[in-house]
Image (cartoon, rainbow, N blue to C red; front, side):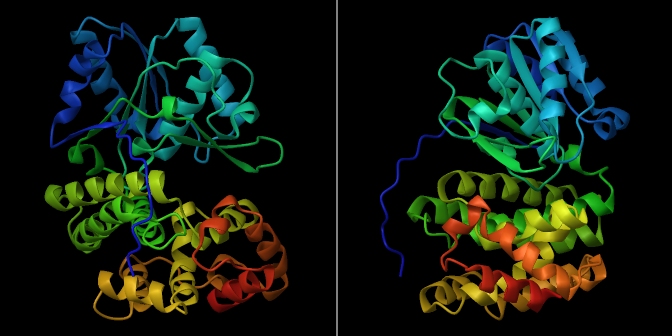
Length: 373
């Protein structure tokens, strides 16, 4: 069942985990040779005071600091271009991505253009940066994307809204600071959307065609931590131990993505975000139980799911969505029968579809959306 598929694992990102570890950001930047630090963040994180705290630790370490705090959700090429201008004007030699996946992706996207020139489209794919890139430290304030442990930046074309996955080993963060205290103040809505996203990463990476012995270790532990931590966080948002479980689980799932990729639930999610403006967590969450059932028609995949959860895994995901008070049908999001084919045709073109254990046809995607309707 667990074929020993060859892999080449090169750990690129140091993990610094624990309450209060944000205070180490200055010493880490100095350790990696930085002197002029651009902090990339979003307005919510700025308002919460986290960028100011990080800047204080950097200043105490004798470093020059500039803040770009205008990152928008699902960053586009416009966000990256604006960030690059600030970085160039400041003369940054080090970048920090502080916030959710959008901030970290924008920081990575900025790094591509700042060091290698051109535009984001030039780096769509893998390994297209020919010059060295600046060191980055990633500091997630949500337990969701796992972007802190990935070498890819997901950036949307500002005109077509197509999401471009731009990856290069040089783009990976040198270190990720995983400080659970930074996630305590996030709104419940952010907690549930990012939490479901982390769970989906752990479950999708476990069964992709690229899964291997190493990725499955991270997938399994990522799921164990998130599955245990998520209900606790919903019951008590100030439970820092549970917050830590979610943050570490999301990071492990991010490492699994780097080694295994994602599948059909994410292929279904992107069109829902593009056409109906669902948040990513809502989109992937509403589709995940149905993709699990679709994949479980393969006995090998069903066995993996059974090893993760002693019971019906698809039903368990639905229970977690219910507990998180997230919509469990597409109808609740305004999707109608006549929209399904357009969604399916877009889903079939998503790059993650090719890694799903069962390669879905357009008709398969129509049925997946219909099941979720």
